[in-house]
Image (cartoon, rainbow, N blue to C red; front, side):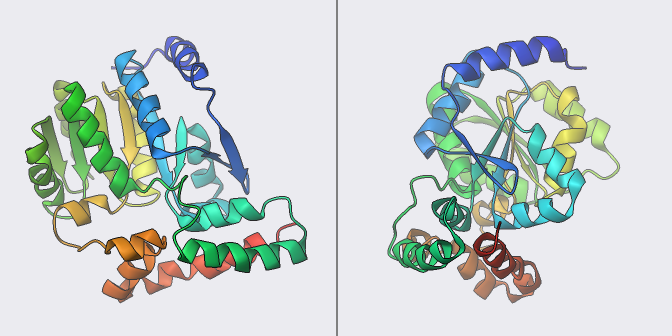
Length: 276
């Protein structure tokens, strides 16, 4: 099934104009500037008004740094309908926008301290939390949910976790390297209102971009490692860590092999502080 783009664009713009989407930018990446409740209202409106093939990316500092080095990845983040803030570092960076170099240095320390005390979380929308909130919404509104990806059988076990929500669900585990036609057929037969895609940064965005026009869905959301938590393979950080916005650090301690990827974080901080 191919998308009639003109019709979709016209209808979606009409729906989105009701909310007056509030965006801000960091290094030319557009981000949505509101809280979880507003995001849920927007997604709910898309589904209620039958807007098809909407696309949400859960963006963190790694995404931003990748986009500064990879024009193809940056172009994907420009195609999405909504980029939500899935990283406290982005909120920290936003608070420094428009300041002088010295102002950024001083404010960076001050705001960093406030974040460690639990402040400035109103715009943080993690993929893990968004999944849970959307499944609650699906239970209330009788929406259909599909889990795609993850390592091994984590999509299946994630679906099992959400069985307590009593929602209509289906899944496809693993990475569909050679059987995408069957995967697409399964998704389109199910016709989910919400499609969670968990292939990790970039891979999931590339997959959504490649196949979105062939999908009969309401909204596709890249959720990174979220299946790892709900499948039980990775214990989530306690509320204390999450309150500080340091869930990434907890995950690093639990999985030291991710250290190389996390080296992008100090590079991100330096780039924010030294931006022109």
